[in-house]
Length: 172
View (tube, rainbow, N blue to C red):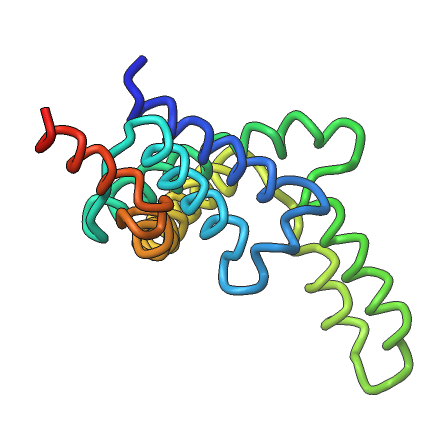
């Protein structure tokens, strides 16, 4: 496995974990879990390869990490479903509690039924959610990768390691 692939996998695992169960609420803040996972990807890549990285390359790494993270997050969520710790079950439980608190405050019984019945899933809704997640995670992964490249990708961002290497090559 190449350094690039290892870095993408590490970032994808971070993204996947931050996208499953209770951690999925982190993604309600502008996909923060995806951005963090993509930044981890770029940080790992620059650390392991010892080279600087441009924002465009960071965006590509971040997008790939986001796509893989979306898939892993869906797998983690499905694995947690039997014990009721998947993000859908948690969100549904919170919505039901909220609606019970709202009962009698202007919400019709039909409206309550629609909200509660909206969680009837299936394979098709899972696949549509996965495709939608892949697109969104790729976009925010690219943003996180570009941010990561700005932070970790330059020689200054890595403590000047690249400059020291270049100076050592000139001296030889």
